[in-house]
Image (cartoon, rainbow, N blue to C red):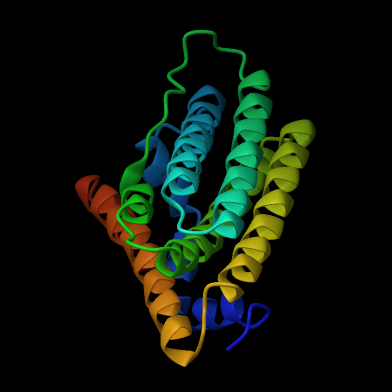
Length: 211
C-alpha cells in the first residue's frame, strides 16, 4: 500500500456505504427533511465548524510534528469553509454552531497518528459525497454561485484527503500499519453511514435505495 493508492482502496472497500451516503437522501438526513436553502446552508456551516474543531483536537493530540502540521492545515481549511458558507447564509438567526456527529466523535477517539490520519481519509471520502449533494441541491435551485461555492469546498476537501494520505505514509512502517489505517478509515465511513441510516429510519425512509 502507498499514499496514492490508499484513498481508492478505502473507497473500494466501503463502496456500498459511500454510494448510499452519496445519494439524494443525504441532505434529507442532514436537514431532518427541511430542504430549504437557509437550513441546508446552516447545516453545512455547522458541519464545517465541527470539522475545524475536530482537526484542532487532532493536531493537539498528534504524536509527530508532521501529523500536527497536517491537521492544523485541515483545520484552517475548514474554518475558511465555515466563513464562506456563513457569508452565503442570509438568515442571521440560523443555528450554525458546530455539530460534531458520529464521524467526528470517531476521529477524536483514535489513539495514534496512524489511525487518526486513516480516519481522516475516510472522513474525506464521506465529505466528498456529501458536498456533491450540496452542489446538486443548488444546481437544481438555479443558485449557481452557491453551487460553485460547494464545488470549491469539494475540491479543497479532495486535496486535503490526498494530503492526509501523504501524511499517513510517514506514519506507516509496513503492511500492518497500513492495515490499521485502512480499518480506521473504513470504520469512519461506517460511523457516518450508521448515523445516516438511523436518521432516515427515524423519518420512516429506506436508507438502502440509492437515488
